[in-house]
Amino acid sequence: MTSTAIDAGVFLLLVSASVLALGSAVEPAGPFASSTASGTGVDVLATTATVAYDPRMSGTDAGGGTTAGDERRVHGSLRGLIARGTVAGAGIGDDALDPDGVAFRRAVERELDARLDGRTQVIATWEPVAGSEFRGKLRAGGQPPPDAAVHATVVSVPTPFPPADIDDPDSVRSFASAFVDDRFPVEALRASLRGEDAAASHAAARYRHAGAVALGDGTAVEGTTPEETNAALAGGLARRIATSSTATGTSSKQPGGTARDGAAVRIVVRRW
Image (cartoon, rainbow, N blue to C red; front, side):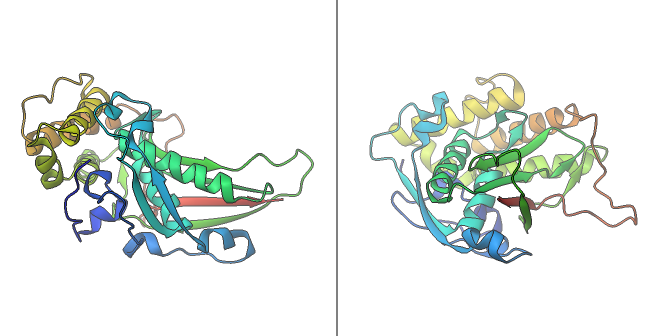
């Protein structure tokens, strides 16, 4: 897939696949480079890795039109890669908005599986909209034996997104717009869609997939500009989030009235 220059804006810290140069390596920085925990249980998260992935492996029709050489490589700390993968593959239930994000998340999971020692499990979750089914999740490693003593360490990795609450429609709309624009950067998609090559085909397929998830119709965004498409996707995603209330949903406010850190990725490292 043809690349464009990587934007320095904070939303692109989430590794929007459409703006990564083929074969390039990006060092995690900004929000994804920090955490609140350290120690033996999270030593693996401090190591660095280069994750290679192919969007064709996302399991959706967005893989159509890519070429055998369309491999992307992302370099950084495992902690940052886990957070990015968890966010990139997020959606409502099992309906991820961006198939490229799913491919990246699976690549991070494979990298972790290859590195973990058999006595470690990593589970990452992202629930930025309190009370809704919108979430990201990533899991690697096996299950501990039933009789094993399990030690868990929790790491919180901030993201560029403010937490939203299903009971606050404005916050849901703001979140949906920010998430869509992050996963589908307008200028990058505009450049890809201009051509008649594999990059254009892949970009169009990504948009069709997102349209099917957010709007219930993959063809609803055909024939529109990237700005119009993103606006439609954001509106549809906000509506889906608003109707995906969970029975156990919690408020985005702590009992004392302060905002919880709902937009952070929560990584649990379990060792036994």
